Length: 258
Ligand SMILES: NC(=O)c1ccc[n+]([C@@H]2O[C@H](COP(=O)([O-])OP(=O)(O)OC[C@H]3O[C@@H](n4cnc5c(N)ncnc54)[C@H](O)[C@@H]3O)[C@@H](O)[C@H]2O)c1
Image (tube, rainbow, N blue to C red; front, top):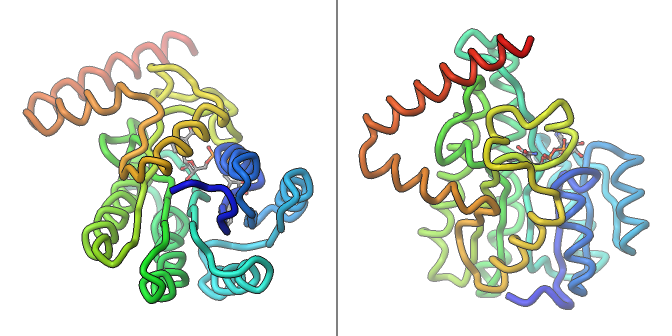
């Protein structure tokens, strides 16, 4: 799909990857509605690109409905919804229930709310595009964060399901799965995800625009991720052994650095 003239919504648009995507969509000639929980940040980006800023908590369904209503009233039918907002956390199964619940609501349930808000009209019109930001962690794993790995896998699963179920009704779906990208989330360093290099949000936005033009499902700004996926699916146990070695090396490097 060409973005020129299209009505788009981008969540998490106040910073990082979402801001990069919002700016690039505007450069491509799209009408951009920016959404974020960060009021000052989202307004600044909207002003900069000549779009609209809507304060939205993506984990609250009424906020997401209000966002889509504002977009429709301002610009018309939504052509593309980019559900990008997300959070990180560290820890394993010991993370308290409230922590699991919060990241689940933001990294998965927000994508359900977005799809619920836009899919019926898109299906009725026979076309529409839904994008979401998961992570390479949603295809592989996240060393040091069970909640992140699990919720990002769930986000990939939802995107796949929508593509399979609604593809023949004209719905296009893409899922963005980067490793480390420079943003607030990686301000303290990209952690283990930065072994293949830290990309800039502009690099990610370029990969996104190219994939949308080709209507390609999987967006991998770090191409190495495809090789890792292939290794995982070709021999799961070998992949798990390799990841355990990788984790052990990473942990010992971390403790010798500290
Ligand atoms: N930076 C990376 O290395 C990396 C890698 C893979 C995937 N991701 C994913 O990319 C997406 C964007 O993250 P980023 O790296 O740009 O981080 P970021 O922290 O710079 O941006 C995230 C934005 O989402 C907003 N946000 C958080 N919770 C929200 C909520 N409940 N409602 C509305 N907005 C909310 C924040 O205010 C912020 O502006 C996330 O889904 C993240 O998991 C990031």
